[in-house]
Image (cartoon, rainbow, N blue to C red; front, side):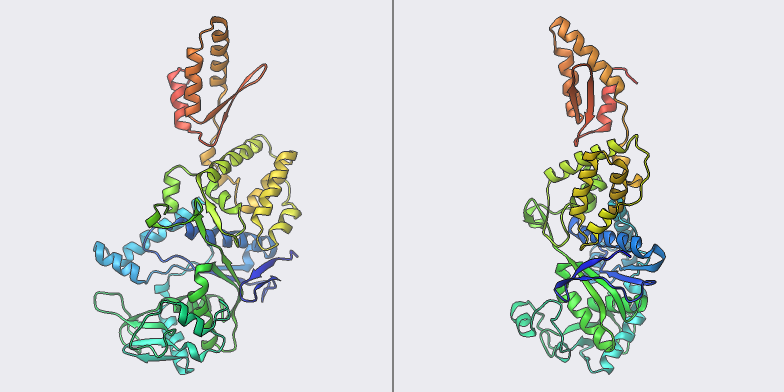
Length: 460
C-alpha cells in the first residue's frame, strides 16, 4: 500500500494519511460560485485536488473514492447579475457551470464523481440549522438565523486565531440582529425579487457557509477524510464550516485532514482587475495558451508555495512539452508507473519533484517512464494533444535545402532569407547541420502560418 503524507492545516504538520475506510475514501473541495468565468487563481485548488484524486485512485482504486466538488448557485453576486441583466438565475448558473466544466477539462482535470448544486440541498440546510438552534448554538433575530461563535469553544483552531484577534483585525458586519460581531449568518430573509424558500423563520435563503456543511454531511457523512481549497477560504469559510458541523453533530470531527493551497501571482504581483493582470482561464485559452501548458506551469510549483504566472514560464513549458511529445512520437513502449514517481508525489503532492524526475527520464532516454509519469500528473495525454499536432516539415526542409544551395552558388541570399523570415515568424527554428536542415517548432509555433507558407510555395 502506498504511504501518502499530507500537510494538515488543522494540526500544522505533515501526517501519514489514514482513511476512515479504505473502501470509501472521501474528499470535499469547495467549488466555484457560478456567476462568471473562473479566473486563473480559481484553478490552483482544482489542479491540487485533481492530482490528489489521481494519487488516491492509484492507491485505493477509483471505485473506492468519493470526490465531491460543489457549485454555489445561490449567492448575492448571482442575484445581482440576474437583476442587472434581466436573465433568469438558472440560465446564468447553468451556463456558468457549463463554462466551468469545459475550462477545467481543457486543463486536464478529471471530473469529480459528485458535483452537487447548493440549491438542490435547501431542505438539508434547513434541517441542519434546526439542529443548531435546538442545541443552543444558533439564534434567530429579525428573520435571520445566526451561529453563536462564543458557544463553540474551539472556534479559531483551524486558522490559529483567537476570537478577540479576529474581531480586532476583521471587517465584520455591524448589524442589529447580531449578538457578537463574529456571529455569522445561517439563514437570511429574501425580498420578493430575490430567490427564497419557505422555512420555519420565514421566506429566505441560506448563508454561504451552511451549504458546504449540509452537502458534505449528506454526501460523505458526519466524518470524512479530506477537505480543502485556497488558503483564502481557511478563514472564515472553513473555520465556520468546522464550527457549525461539530456543533450540529457533536460526536463528529467533520473533516480530518485539511489541505490549503497558496495564492497565485501574475508577474510577481497579486492578480487584480485594478492592476490589469486579471485573467480568466478562458482568456488564456483564447489567447493561444494550451491547457496542457497552463497545467504544466501550475504543477511546476508546490501547491503550498506562492506561484507566479508569467509569459516566460508559459513559453518554457511549451518548449518542454513540445520536446517531450516529440520524444513520444515514435515510441510505443508501455511501462508501469514508476514507483519513484509515486513515492515523490506521495510526499505531500510534490508535483515539482515529479516534474524534475520527468526531465531526468527525458534526458536518459527512458521514454516509457516519461510517458507513464507524465500521465500520472495529467500531462502528455492524448486528450491534451491537439495543440501540438504533427506537422510534416519534410517538404519545407527540402525547399530550404534547395534554396540554400542556390544562394551559396549565386551569392544571392534574398530568397533563402525570405523563407527563413517566414519560418521564424511562424515559430519554427531553422537548424542547419553539416549535411541536413531541420525545421523544429518552438513555443511560438503557429500551424496556420506554416500552412500558409506551404501553400505560398506550392508544396501542398
